[in-house]
Length: 149
Image (cartoon, rainbow, N blue to C red; front, side):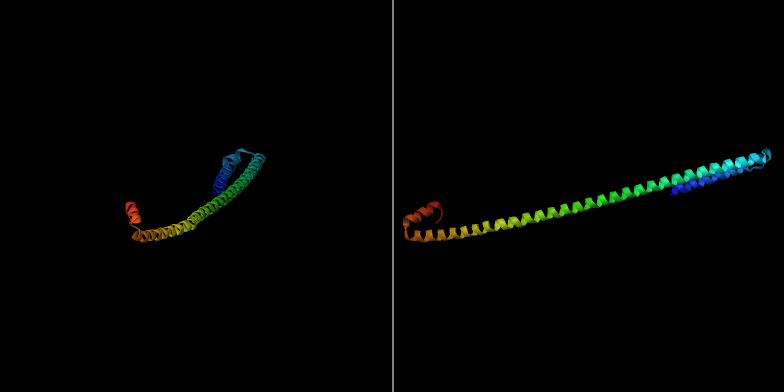
């Protein structure tokens, strides 16, 4: 819009210069009234054509501005869609990470429980073997050789 205003100022300046040149005293006295009327009519026609061109240019500039606004709106929408997609991907990654941690705990819990049960059973077996070895000297010797007594 700033460009159009600037162009209008220039056109008005040009029109004023042309008008002053046409109505200067030297030209008025050098020409007959019919020639002056003809020149005035020609100037009016040129100004009308110039005004039509300026209006056409303003229309094109407005259309161009609308197209730029449409492109800006489309680009903003695409950027918003991309941001939403990034948020969804981040949420999915965090959910996957949480699932892995939860699954690892649930998968390890039975293994830890079995390991504790086996350790308790091993302790009971050692205790039973030691008690049996106290009554049986051969067994005591075997356990000493194995490092269990």
